[in-house]
Image 1 (cartoon, helix red, strand yellow):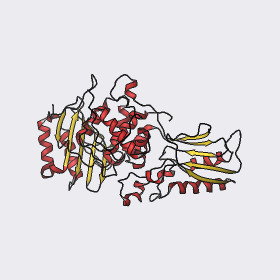
Image 2 (cartoon, one colour):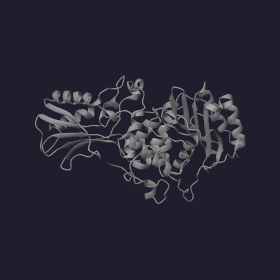
Image 3 (cartoon, one colour):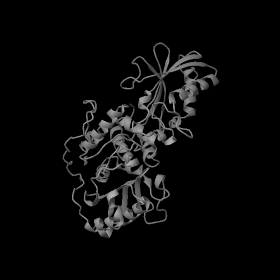
Image 4 (cartoon, helix red, strand yellow):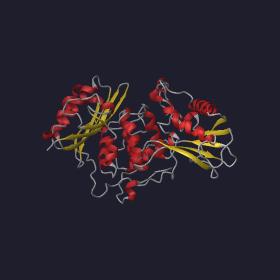
Length: 422
C-alpha cells in the first residue's frame, strides 16, 4: 500500500516501536501475555510509584465520594508517575480508544500515508474498483471513475459504452465490530465500515447496504454520461490486491495521515478510526486486527493487565483500557519521531474539535490537547496539558460519574498547578 512504513523507529535505529512480524502468528482468544521489553536506552518509561503526594491528595479530594468510579493518572516528561488513583483498574474508555488506534496507525503507516481508491482493467476487459476505506470519498470522485470507465478520461484503449464493473468489498459480517449495539448501527456515527464508502456510508443516518448504494450511484452516473454498466460486488482477495494481470487506470487518494488522525482524534470520527485500525493492522478481519493491535501495545512495554481491544473507535463497550496505560502510551509517543503529528491531531481546549466548547476563556484554553470519549455512563478525557512546570500527560476515565465534566475541569486545574510537583 502506498506510503506504508512499518516499524518506523526500528528503521531509525531507536528500537522503541519494534517491527512485530505481524503475519507470523494466528490470533486466538487467549489473553496477551508477552513479556514487556526493556525500556530503550535514554528513553523515559512511566514509573510505577507515585512521586507527588501533594497532587495525589488534591486529586483524591476532587473525586471525593465518587473515587471508586474514576481512574486518573498523571505523568511528566521524565517518566515520573505524579499521581495515580485506580490507574490500573480496567474501564470502558469510549473514544479514548482512538488514542491507541491513531498511535499505532502513525507508527505502522507513517506520516505520508493516505487511503487509496483505484480503478483497474482486467485482461478480459472488465473493470475492478478497489478501496481502503477513504472516509471522504464523494460524488465528484465517483463521477471521475464513471468517466474513466467509459473511456472518456484519456485512456489509450477506451472501453465500450456498455461496461462490466466489479466492486471489491468486504462481506456484511465485517461491516460492524461485533459489539456495536443495533441502535448505534442505524446512526451516522455507527455507519458500516466498508472499503468503498461514499461519504463514510452516512447521510442523515447510516447507509444500511453500502455496496447496493454504490452500485446505484455509479450506474446512474454512467447512464448520465451516456453509457450502460453491469455492476456487481466481489469479495477481496486475502491481501486486498487485484489480479496480477490487472492494469491500473486511475486512483484517488484521501487526505494525508495528519488529516486522517485529526478526523479520528479532533472530531472523533468513528469510521476513520476503524479504517485506520484495519489498515495499520494489515487486516480487515476483526479478530486479527484486534489481536495485532494488542501485540503492538504489548511491544511498547505498556502496562497490559486487563487491557482488551475490540474495536478502533471505542463505540464497543467491550473495550477495556486503564488510565495508566494511556499515560504511558502518551509518554512513549512523546519520544516518537512523529510526536508532533500525534499530539497535533488532538482537540484543543476552548478552541478546536470536541473540546472547543470546554474551558473557553480560562487558564486551560489552548493549554490542553486531548481526546474526549462519551457513551452512556462513560466519560473520558486524556491528553497533554501544558503547565508552568512542563508538560503533563493526564488520563481521566469515569464509568458512572454523576457530573464528570465538572470533575474533569477540576482535575485539570489542579494538575496545572506546577507548585504541587516541583
